[in-house]
Length: 491
Image (cartoon, rainbow, N blue to C red; front, top):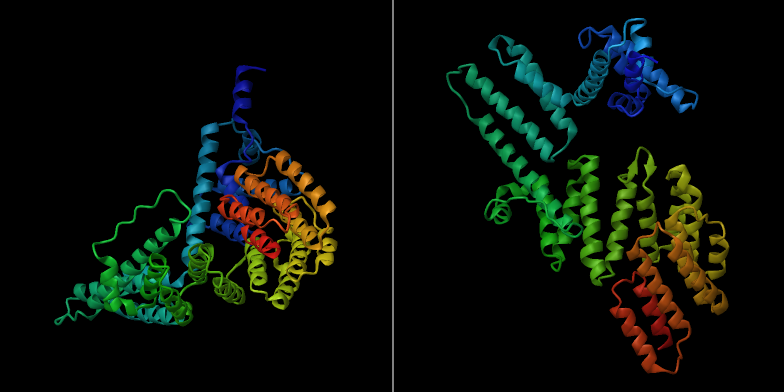
């Protein structure tokens, strides 16, 4: 092999992980068809080689998914696109870079065309000459209709209204009208303030939420007395401001529960003013408030509030991603429904919505959660039967099933089976390297206290009190409630 061959071999590395392959692989069938039309249009692209390169990458990706394709390297690409021309690595890399840029431009163009309001606002800016007054008036009517049809009153609505009114004011200035009215300027200023205040409050609410999970807070600067200003300002009447102001208050003052109830009222009144993605975020603010600031502080009646919120997002289909129900939300809905003893509703939910999970989650989900339902209904024999159908390939289901079986044996008084399970569970926890140390400690503590519980002399009140105190003092223990309930039963 000569020096040139060595050079070519060095440059013909596999291209499977290149940027251009990754972005084309992310396209659905419609995008692939539309992007090819984009490429063959001389308005967007004049390089025929880009079309050939795109077709080649599509063929490769299709064959790769069918597990019948060969590795894709630079030399192979060059021969397919440029034939017998001498290999030029720089030229090929530029071509692939150009295709990647066009793919990104296509996505931006597609997003722009899917938003007719943004398109019309840009058009309005281009129609500022007096001789295009008829065109401008038609654009104004179109924008007005689009804003009304959207029915939004979120921060993006105020941003668009600001742009709209501001451009109208600029047009009037350029047209040199004898008498300039300031109506559009005043409206533009109002919507600019609404956009700024609502967006600033939204960022502030995000920070208040992050404080529960992150050791470092994002640095969001508020103007002096900003919250007090909003409270007494006319902008508080705007839905986008009102909703986020109420979130800030319920996070700042969780002990004043009226803020949460006010937020729920505003959410019911103004939910339609926000897009689906933001609607989901607003509900998550409410759910996290219930869990982190109320339930985790002993106010267990907030489980009912949480259950009601989950039913609302379920009915509004806000927790579906591309038609599938998020498995985490599925599990949370069932757990909360069982907490509030809505057994019939939970059973109906399991039967109706398990098919909405990604296929690989469905079988274990229905078996595990039906077992959990039987456990909460104190149908312990059915629990054991149902758990036999659960596959332990998923770590979460494996741990949850073992824990549920342990409690079931305790409730049935099956001490020998319980003893054996405690020993095998300990071995499983020690050997499994996928389980974090903190999770292991929590499960180990539950096994330790359960072992003490079954050997506890019911006549020894001092020993019972000591065990209760140990359970209450243990920081790494997620099953505290169940253990304390069992201690109370022998007191």
